[in-house]
Length: 592
Image 1 (cartoon, rainbow, N blue to C red):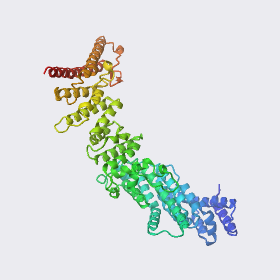
Image 2: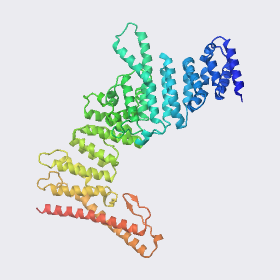
Image 3: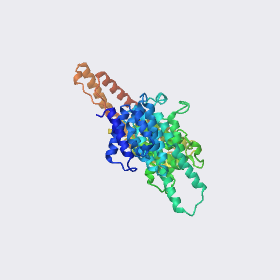
Image 4: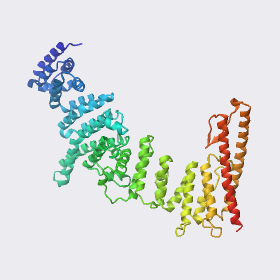
């Protein structure tokens, strides 16, 4: 281990020796001695002497070539803040930024940016982004790839920080995530301004004769613009797709909302049309020269995040032209919704449903044509609690033919009694509308209606159908049949139900009655066995397998078993009661 005195002596010797050498002809040994001795001096508190050596006019070429190696211990002192040598270390640090070669400074600074502890990550970013910015500016026209490397490293570091999810977390900013977002925007600002300035100049200047030189300059501008575009696209994906922005009435000054707004502003400043990005799925974009393929340049998840910011949070909404109709915007957004709903993270699923709902609300009821059902997302909106609200909203937006075809598709593919029951209730509502005076349509009465009714008025597995599993579907089917028998006169037969009644009886009513009787007999036998087992106090032998909703009930006490069996028997009585009422109504109508 070198002592401070030895290290200072070695540093002085190597500097003195290198002063006599031609510029940039220092050996590997010179570099190693300068690095080890210089770092040791700073660690051991000899910063005053190091500062004197670094500032000496005779040593500027040495500092230019080797000074960047002193960055690690300097940055550690600057991060600690309370070190007594802080002023000297800061002076050394600033001089290195002005004197050393920018490429080597960039490497050195990015190496010091790499941290794992959340507290250190935020402090390192806050300390080093301004110096990084200064170094990149010094690179002039050669900075694009270096900027890209720096932005990639910065985003990787920010991704390690815990995200603020609540209002309180965003306000407290314990891990300085929000401060890092602000720092990133400040970091890219001069480069955004440079691209914006270049774009304005290109618009103002007419083509010159020297087109080759112009093209080379344009390439450099495209490279810088491409790196900033990549930064925006990555930021839209993380963190903006993973955090829930607070509205102004919830959090007046929201750093995350400000960050999102700034990202959209940057996109506009570097020549990207936000409306074209959002509507990209249906707009034929011009071929863009550059280093990235379209799908890489504009990742689908990032565009979906952008659409969510615009349509749900209304950021930059004033930049959108009014020529795009709500239906056109919905068709574009449906592609973004599909991307979000294909993910597993809850935040992305929620944003997909929010975007879908906001897009639908703007569309006039009954205006979506049947050919839009070719967009599969209209058919595959998840059947979840919030999803049912969105599900009904999409039904309301379809025109009559689209509703009819949507119901057909859902009855064919859903395999979920609750969803099927929901669809059948909607079918009943549409028939009721069609039968009102002046509302006649070809889809929910007469010859077109019958294929749909045949899909409804049938038991999935005949008499063996599990009536408890299919309860929602069975009850809504019975309610629909009862409505048709009451509402449609035999003499008018607007729905065609009276022509098809014999088929309905054979395919639905008779199998249902047999099924009810079979199920009741089974459950009464199970009830009797359970009660006898309880009486004999043989609880350990009382094993019951009861299927409700297609799933076997877990082990229960005899009292709970008896209660579940009574509930099932009550359900069968309810089904039988409605079925008997329908049979009475049919008999009365037949006798008229």
